[in-house]
Length: 325
Ligand SMILES: Cc1cc2nc3c(=O)[nH]c(=O)nc-3n(C[C@H](O)[C@H](O)[C@H](O)COP(=O)(O)O)c2cc1C
Image (cartoon, rainbow, N blue to C red; front, side, top):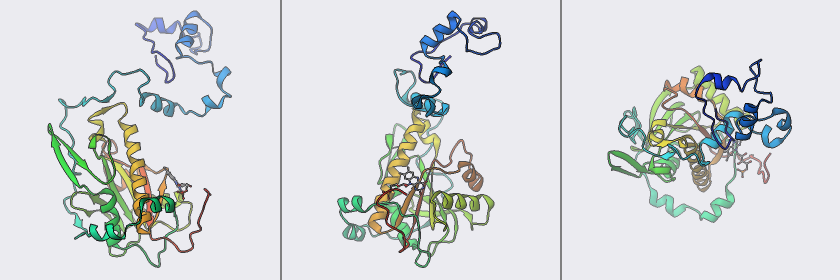
């Protein structure tokens, strides 16, 4: 028997022993010696004494479990980068599968981008969330290409002991780079509306679903619009979808937490590059992974969304908000 905040786990050698801890009605609310011991271990809490305290009520069960089990808390067994799957399963490759029909963005011009880039200080100070896009002057394909090149392209690939590692403009724990970018494109000059996947190796876009009419794709766009609290739909919704096996093949217990950290560093990298390019950017805090699975047909146990980000040309009437709305 374990509870997220207990200082130990309790192991019962048989079920009759465990049943002695239960009241005749099957509850754990009584005051037998066994129940006192469980309370002392921290696996049994008295709901009456704690239900009105914020420090208890603020935690949903799964979040407290997730927090405590994805940190060490003295439970060192099978935790961290153990490479537990090494002798059982082949390591998932660095390159995403199915990116064979990629349309490359074409020649890049990093030298010019470097020359026109503003200082880090200016970019940090100017960065803000901009939610309204200007459909009279939408973002172009070339600008989208520059944004993806500067945030998410694969710039180095290396194999060590049969495992492929990479390097991109943002950092990644263990050089794993599990997050793939899918783009829900509504309005970009020279890119057909629909769902696309970014190919970080070729630096191009691979088609996933044409148009925005598919019910799941349409619902994804509605969801993104709703999340940004503005009435008009975003020009581009970037969907961050890890290939879970890339990271869970190596890490135990903390892999999912690491993925969410990667979403954070990628979001900030996108904010900074978008600011430097004069694009409108806004992180999104919630999304619908099930819609993504239905839109792409991908197995949600292998790859689905854990983060979203909106991008477009900034609307001239976007009010500057010094403080959150
Ligand atoms: C992880 C994360 C999630 C966010 N989620 C949303 C969201 O769902 N909808 C939204 O309109 N803004 C969202 N934002 C933007 C914040 O509201 C914004 O960063 C905050 O108000 C501070 O304003 P600023 O970014 O302009 O400095 C999110 C930002 C972050 C970093």
